[in-house]
Image 1 (tube, rainbow, N blue to C red):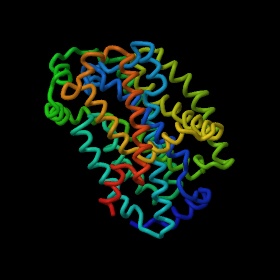
Image 2: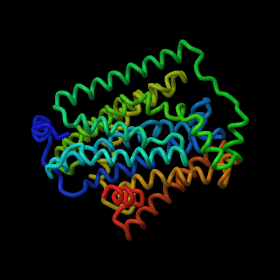
Image 3: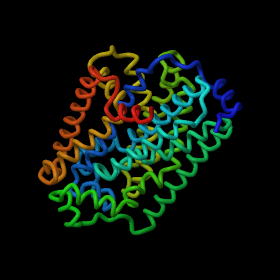
Image 4: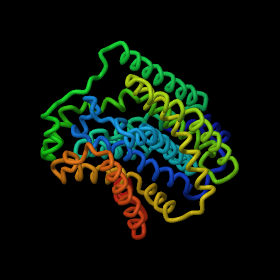
Length: 386
């Protein structure tokens, strides 16, 4: 399908001139999003029920002060940030195809297919709560949507948000009026992650694939909205180093931390039944504040080793995402070191685990890019797509 003339004209009118080269802020944000996503997932790896913890009401982070701090700062925020950044990446691909006069979506479908296959492998062999499969499906839908008019894009974007909030409202109402989700005790699942083999865990994921895939299915409207939000922010120049980008990020900072963070805290302090509104409604608003905050820090703080390491991790984000889950599973599960069964109840262990894996990702990505232009997973993707 060729890009429609109306969509091309509208995109040119709505967007500032294309930035030359990479946008450093985007790479830093990707690095921050990878570490932040680990800040949520590490509590799943350390739970005695492993990946099944969220399904049986076990994998919670707010039972201790450290866990509550992680939940306040990370839960849902960086997953939303990663989703927005995937949307930004899609907008960059679209602009590149438009500049070269190429068909759209054209070859982008192959990129989405690679992401879906990689996500399927990652889900099966490594981590049941993989996000890549959902991103791949969303990318195909949004890629097609970019060939429509600006009016159609805005209509779909805000309709998706309305549908998502309606679903979250209904789920929350059902939690209050129904029996809720009472924590369960299942010795077999506990033994599976404490001492089971890697292959047994693979079979467990496949046997419960629908339940493990329920999050991207239920939140698909949110994914569409956040992808489109990423497209819209990129076209508005939100990630540029000019005055326009600074003004946009300042507004995001005010909305996200001034409105989203207090709302998120209030929902956290409320009944457990408000969990879905906390993670899937308030957290994306807080995420906007994080984007603004990171942008402000990049503007004000002199570039140093931490910023450089975050940029490196951002440039190897797909590889970093896979590696962090490989490391966490090998450290926590019984087929590896099995440390979750021994220390998983200690929040300091979980915090130390997050810090250690984060350090490996930051240092490792920096060293890797001294010899290679991109990460190993990104390199494989480029080779296959070429």
